Length: 529
Image (cartoon, rainbow, N blue to C red; front, side):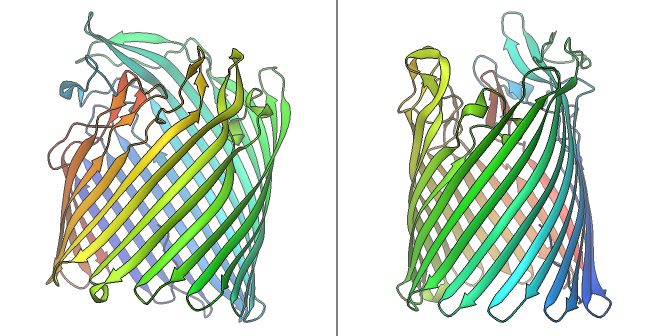
């Protein structure tokens, strides 16, 4: 998270070690810049082997920012960031007899020269003009450039008869993306009204290089194998390029009807134009999409400790990423969604306890489905919905101990969806959506010491729309212990997955799951001056 510059000089540093050969370090400093400005610079890097063979991952970033008062009413904010990531080149563990195998937990079936590498650079300049006590105008200009590369063997299946792992999907992809955006916004305060109005525009140049159709196959033994190298029969070559132009206008108002009643309203219009050019000689196209969104909410403060709220809103989403929109998807309009939500927030016993609760219903129309009259055709007309409840609570047991808990219940289903073979999925739950998830934490803080013990539960999740296969529910336990050695030094020990639970975070294919981290410890030291 970015920290704002301050004219008061300060310096921070942290270092940490942990299981999986984890190392991390960071430094940051801020101070005055001349008589009217301030600066801040932060740098961070980490490394880990991810508890698997050839699972090395590295991340690094440098964040810089400057604030400067050009005049009493005009401020300039500048930031320049550089980020490099080499995530773990790991795509999960194959199932054995339909389940997870603890013996394969540390195995990585990717090739030896696998690569995932991201480089992002971003620059932002923001001018803020306080025209009057009631009116503030700002303009933010941003530029971002991203280079992203993948070269991996991504699909694995365990052949029990031959006791081997069959590998496929030799996938090579490279993205070059350049984006320029601008946001002009005015904020006006007039009595009971708090109004914000703005205009946004952006241009994105995107080039996609790959080796579709991603052929290639190989076989390795479950243990002690030579991982081999990336050897695809399909050449990696430029595939297509898109230019995406977007515009948006929005208007929001927070109207204080009475000291107890606050009415929130907002309108937004988005327009997108996507121009795609094939770099392989196929046909290109131009697609224009637009949408309107609205939001209306009411907050009612019953007393100093209790507030109720309700909100209705509408929105939209493309059926696929606009940057990679293809000819088949270009004929589709944006999907439409609606949400209704209501809730309560209350503080009890003079702030020693507090709780919130919310109920919601979300519907989404025009998702892609098969044509009932022709199963070979994909059309818009599908629909899905979800309703649910969320509850959070925090209670101080005494001056040192506090309990925090939250739980969420989600009842999601497809209302209309037909897949291949004219199979209706109506009534099925969408993939990766648990019905129940929850967290429970006991926290301690006294005499320079802090500690916590917590549990997290995630319910069963289906991996496909047919609901034919499910990821098992799981519960994990974590703990932490911190010591404020001095006013400037904090030592923190975090313990993850105390029971060393073997569990799947998500599925990658029906034959392989991505696993959660094994039990490990992390020790960090933070120093502030």
